[in-house]
Image (cartoon, rainbow, N blue to C red; front, side, top):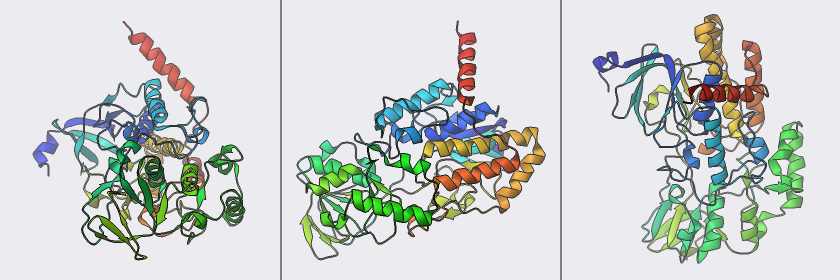
Length: 462
């Protein structure tokens, strides 16, 4: 705990906002704050932008074979499309380059204090005391937490003792690490499916352990990225689900033929498993499916059906806990392990404590970051220029409780707590902007920002 004396000695930046994290969410916030003239400082513990997409960022879960889970043309920042030469599903290296280009284009890097982890954030009356490691605390009027979600592995415990190697997916970098090993991947989210494909190509033998069946969506449908169809679909869920389910039966077939359990839920009631490569490896018996682990027994894994395998490496692809380690956990309400913020971003009890990126959704995350950053930035601007408008929005923060999952009716699991349907989310944010008389993001605003940045750089050039 910082003493009151330390707080009183804090550097006064109370006219500004602090952004913590320079991954895609933090960069989205920086661009929109800059666009609306909101003063801010920006902190990043690593020496570069990009967050998890920088494979050299200590603690990142990134691996060499990773690709974006949503397609190129629906996934970029607003008014800043990904280049046409990128793949339909860009590689992790392309996404990293794109993110760095975004930061350079809008002059965001010049504001970021790199190599500056934040060790503590706490409320002090109507301001926030932010402590960068080894530096004097600073006082801000608001804090935007954009430090990301995939840093704290969730590792289950199984009975018995295992004499082989146990790792979490956060440690995985290359399929070459599986060479000469009998590998069991536990969990079949999208990262687990990718890593299972690495094991299928490099390991001596490869297995996946799953507790339930999944609906597998191929990455391409009729030669087009699967999510490009969803962007244009406006039919209600009661009609969309059976239509798409019938299409999947035609395109994918019966997944139980390859050992996967029959799904125990309807399509879209869990986060979709988008992976064509996994189907290929299952169809070619490069990887075998096992059910849930019952216990370990020396160098064997025993499964709930009584079968057992001799295994060298168990790799848990079992997800992450959404922690914000520089803040007292009690300052948030929680939905599972997700901060239960209004519109995923606004703390209902502590003014100007924001979160961006602590979200699980089914599409276009970067676009959603821009949508919520646009609302945050205009609210912060109005606190100075239109205080009555800001107070009106604060009433909404306290009382409005929208259903952002729409009609998905998701399976009860930690991953789906607070899940957001991208279409529903964008529609609700549009209603909020209209009610508050706030601006939409309009095509062309990025060009004007780019010109302003270039003009400033030209004036400052020696």
